[in-house]
Image (cartoon, rainbow, N blue to C red; front, side, top):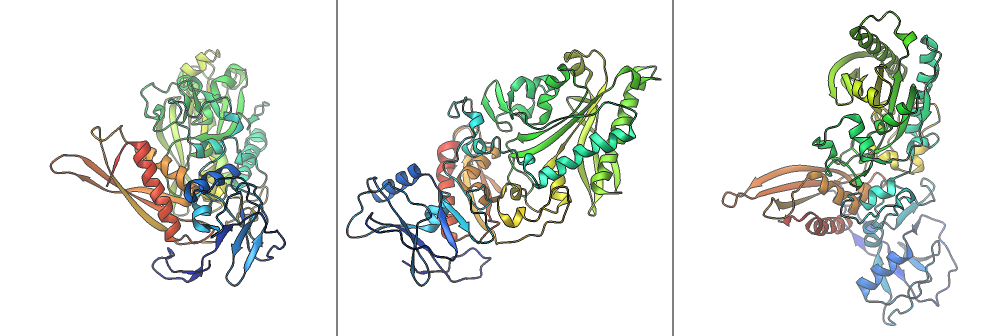
Length: 512
């Protein structure tokens, strides 16, 4: 049961390691000993294991009492998880399930040692074929034709990383809130404070997310290739501005809204389909507009207040850095700007902002009352301030990650691993003559659902137009990398084969 494997993805350098296998055994074996060394805990659901074993080994299910792990020198009985699912095991041989197949392909493995969390987690190295949808989505049919929320995304809804104590996103959130509610208010003449909202559910009406913010019906952000729809009238919010109209109508003059937002996006170290955003809004009363004789004077005053406040925020977060304002366009503000800072030897976009569009203010029942709004991404700021190299790390529950952070402190993240990547290409024909229209974000969703956070990057590396048929072929390179361990060619081949199968079935393309 124990053998050598030299096919590790380590940049061409061969390593000799001992492959561990787990064996399903009859019920007469007793659970009597547990190794005190490194342990692997199977945490997948019972029903899923039943289906896999039954389909792959033609065994009826009824009772499985123990799991073996065969170590390098001895057989160690593992009883961390005992299942009662298989009764009929052939007398001639036991059922052998390779650890790499069952653990990494089906998301069963959790590595437990002094450096790892002992509870099932959203580890960056785990994949999950049957992720559990959030209870927040229990009222929605995720199989409906109008719904494009994938199982992976459905399992992320409501995790609220921004509310976890000592999480980098929570540290940034608290520092920004402290600035606006304490330091900024002290320096301003207003006695009104900012209301804080950080627990709004991410499920919102399509109207609130788009129409109320003057986003045109034909805007690309409203397409299913960019937005997650539960149905045509309900989406997972793409920005926290989705709550702006509701709060303005309620009479709140100043507020900060923080929450998880969802966008179908590319896969790389700085993009993730779930991230966290904060919006700030400040409305001005007549006393604060004293001395303004025209609409232009009002806009100028609001704009100056906005820029002064945000420049103060940038200094609070980054110190005394060089800044510049760039003209921008957003449907919901006019005029609109982006703030950039010179940090780490380059110009970085920090946030977008502007004077709230007059039509939005009027629709909220506030007449011509002026105000400003800004929006920023917590991950973008945290990656820069903490020197976090990969956005997937925010979802890790690895103790080596979280032990480095303390509430209220900004520290430099110390990488605890840098394992080699494994690259796999996939090529296919696209076009109306092949199937439905293809969008790269559709491929990203499939890859993410199959391989989870083992996928580091998906990029288009080549295109080809057939000289006779004029058909278009795309070649995408998928980069697999775990932040916890080295990946084997065998386990990645299994994932890649599943990616190819699902791509062909779901995207309607013709594989090459």
